[in-house]
Image (cartoon, rainbow, N blue to C red; front, side, top):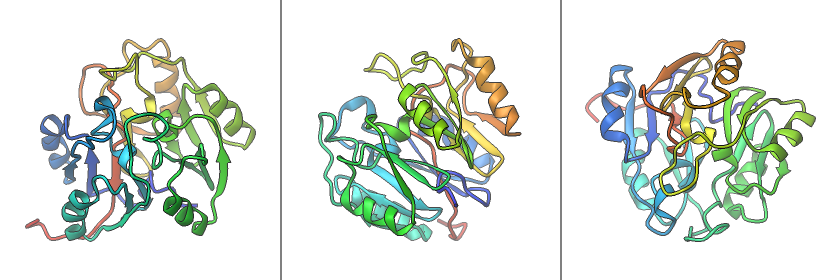
Amino acid sequence: MKNPFIPLEYANVVIVDGRIYPKVCKKFQDMNIKAIPTIACKDVQEPIAYHPDIVMHPLNHNTLIVAPNVFEYYYESLSKLGIRIIAGEKKLDKEYPEDIAYNVGRIYNFAIHNFKYTDEKLKFYLKKENLEFVNIKQGYTKCSMAIIDEKAIITSDYPMYKKLTALGIDVLHIRPGYIRLDGYDYGFIGGTCGNLSTKDIVFSGKFAEHPDEEKIINFLKKYKKKIIWLDNEEAIDVGTIISLNCHFSNSL
């Protein structure tokens, strides 16, 4: 089962939190990757307003379903790159769970979410992919899971750890906290990273202050991942770095 969060070919486009874009766009450019900054979704809480995984979900490596709140911007920014943009039905709003409709986690042949609140059009497309729905209480599901390999994730969410371990997924459970998300007590590890290929994984920053730093690094080594650090400062939850494969001219 192809996971849209793990590009089979090296990604040539990434969608990143617009607040970190000025700092990281040159780094991606040096890797021959075009970085597209997010815009604020002003209908959700400010700390997560720029997070890609709040407003969109990659159905495959060049198709995104996007919340109607910000659809026009992403349609204009990404359609010209050969990326298919589908408008979701659920308009996001300020208070939880009105902001989680597109924050679905994916691993192996599972889609993981609190499906009571998932966008109906997204559910339709996930069913078309023949994915097994795994229902959990955690609504910020993608935020909560760092997708490492075809059947491997890292999470601080204990119920997710228990449920996915029982389904045969290799889950490293880490202590919650120690990841910065301004405006909240802490962020989630899934929001600090994104896969650029089956072997390359990029992180917003390092885990030097995290008590499970060694476990995290060893888990990445277990899956022979090449780690790319965007910053030498602490890891920040930037709402998943979404990678895409698309065809566009160098003039764009």
